[in-house]
Image (tube, rainbow, N blue to C red; front, side, top):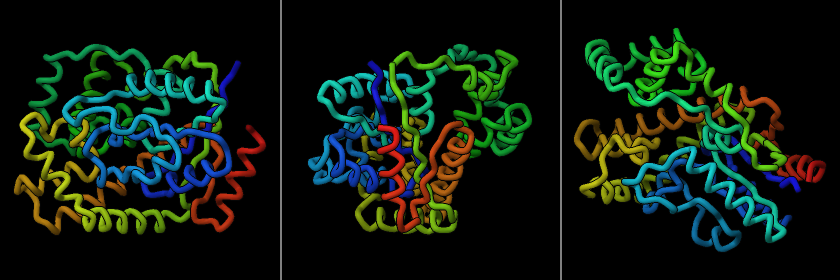
Length: 308
């Protein structure tokens, strides 16, 4: 038996949650979050988690399943998602995967390539070089040997830049080529992949800015402040590297001003959306829905009913 699985992908602030909740009124389903920040407890405002009322409306999986000081991986997500998909199908319902963490979708649908273990010597040398020339220069170096990985990795993400360069030195292969040769998942699923995104990038940028201001009004800074005062949480954890949280952390540490927090937080979110769209464009088979189209939801339903 093959499982039908709906995947609503898309950049941040594109309206994926609203579409999934409307679908829940049409078909018996449960939602599986595909978001590398929503997995963490207490990180609610900055991740735009579904509200308690929305989570009562339809059951959500893989939200609030890890403490912020315990890193959660794409491989662990794939394992957890498989269990959730099977559980949902046993109830006669359809799983709807919703989110923008494209590596998580890839891990589930295609598997992950085995990457070489860390080489502390190479890492130390790369760190020394970065201290000398800056991470922006290291990102440019990555773009020369692995252009696709460079588009997917934020220039302000030293850990991932370092890892991509390290993998290239160890294997003489690009990280993106290893992603491409990943083994497929053996879960017997038919994935209905749908990208939810506004055709006009300007509208997406406006949505991102409005969402960031709304988060701040709802107490985002106070949320991060509670994390900031936890002894076992620091800025290099995956949870705190999440967009918005890193910038708020830098503000609380006195490294940037309040105005810079807004500017950098919005800019980082826009960069995230750009990387998400890059993933989507390179995904392969994908049905695109313009989230700003007045008929977007009807177009989504029509596509799904042709495939369910």
